Amino acid sequence: MTKTKVENYFDQWASDYNLAFQKEAQEKNPLQKLINFLFRRKTFYFRNKHLEDLILSLKVKNKKILDIGCGPGQTALFAANQGAQVIGLDISKEMIRMAQKNAKKTRLSTSAKFMVKDCVKENIPSADIIFCIAVLEYYKDIEPIIKKMCQASHETLVICDTQFILWRIMLRKLLSYFKGFPVYYHNSLKIEAMARKYGFKTTKIIDLHTFRTYVFSRKKH
Ligand SMILES: C[S@@+](CC[C@H](N)C(=O)[O-])C[C@H]1O[C@@H](n2cnc3c(N)ncnc32)[C@H](O)[C@@H]1O
Image (cartoon, rainbow, N blue to C red; front, side, top):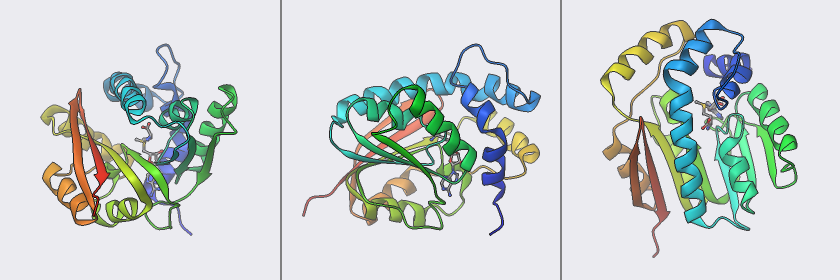
């Protein structure tokens, strides 16, 4: 199977991506250093803090959680630290290696398992809560992904996507030329309509910094 450009990119730069979660870091690649400086570091700081608050409010103890496109595992590991049983999936084997390393460092390897999986092309396991943080932006046609996540979630689906901020869109579109793949900005109403179509209702939408978080809950019959 040939590697997708997204997989290739995150495989190559997983370690520099992981460094964006740390304040003082020495990235290997100058372009990654610039991306971390311009976009990731501040966004990750706000996003992590916000996701941690959200995870605490969801009362995840003993819940089964799936983190789609988990990257180096920060969200998954926070949930595992709150007593959840977590599976993190990512298309990039380097990201998964990084997540496993982070799990070992934080002694959470028993409650947080990380596996390589293309969540667009392959089946995903079911869970009480599904997280999909900063992944949809790499795909043009997101309905099949949202459908799959809605079918796999028993209770809650949390999607975090990039907001329309003109200067960031322009800069990211330019950078995507160097990265070799495009980024897509998705309409909120369409995301909500897709979740509704597959049995979920919007519980909360939170706009913060440069991202928007949707919390969807399964509709009761
Ligand atoms: C911007 S990173 C976000 C990582 C993490 N969720 C976070 O919040 O830091 C996007 C991640 O999605 C992963 N990804 C992209 N397409 C995927 C797919 N089809 N299946 C699984 N993971 C995917 C990438 O490898 C990458 O680790």
